Image (cartoon, rainbow, N blue to C red; front, top):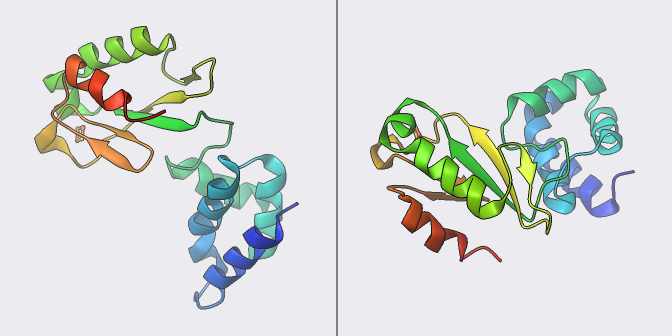
Length: 154
Ligand code: FES
């Protein structure tokens, strides 16, 4: 069941919108901000609130890379694997992340600190290789710089 706060925020988002469908991704982000991810039950409740089927809303969740349908760590690392980053050092970064965190792509560290996910281009190609942690983008990375960046996320 959605909390009162979640429901109020979603309703406030939907009220001025031309169609409730147009706020679907924002509604999911509201739930995610409260819970860290979007479980099936919350997705069904949001769908009912917006007059959508759960399948319709799930397709929105699937389309947006930043909506998590499974539990994630306190910090989510989105590692860009598109062409500029690939050329400029994707593999050494991925290897450093995997060895330092002890996880592979799609996994969460045992302490729940980080989840590591692949992503398409972050729009930071001129600073490739790049990744995003939570809402922060980091570019011009080397494995050594990456170590420093990770220290900022407890
Ligand atoms: S290819 Fe990685 S940010 Fe564009």
